[in-house]
Length: 217
Image (cartoon, rainbow, N blue to C red; front, side, top):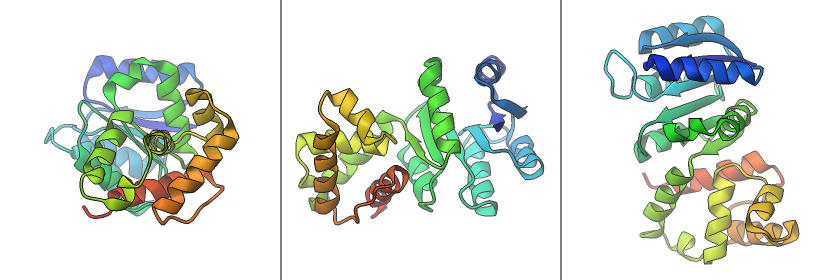
């Protein structure tokens, strides 16, 4: 799997290169600025991009904007964005097209090698990998003024947060120490309460939930 990595801090960039290579990823390019990232994405056509939100020369949202342009040129192109802090606007921009293959992680998560690599693989496979803190803030923001979300029980909200992170029913059941059948019932209730069509596809159900949470920007 070919990866383009964009991170302006040399030590972190070098560490991520070594980590991904240790898990059998091929680093097509490791760059430090927005213009370099744009060229690498256009010329190399990697399988997935791992991108810091803030890159030179602007140090604002240069990395994110490069990633969004790449997704417009290649619909569904997998992008995992890294950020120092939760920025709800950035998360919503990533989710806006609803096509999947997106992730948003806080940089602290990269120090958990297995969690980070799992996120890269999930995004590359067309799934979604959202930082738990991002999901919690989106849920809290929507709960204040959205009646359908307020219909959920505390357990259903807990299941929804894990679904939105990209977890399967089996993974949620294992984390909450309940049966997979119980989680299937919770997910059915969630879709019914949120007026969302039930799907057996894990990625599509996550995208549906995230798209719902993103409404009313």
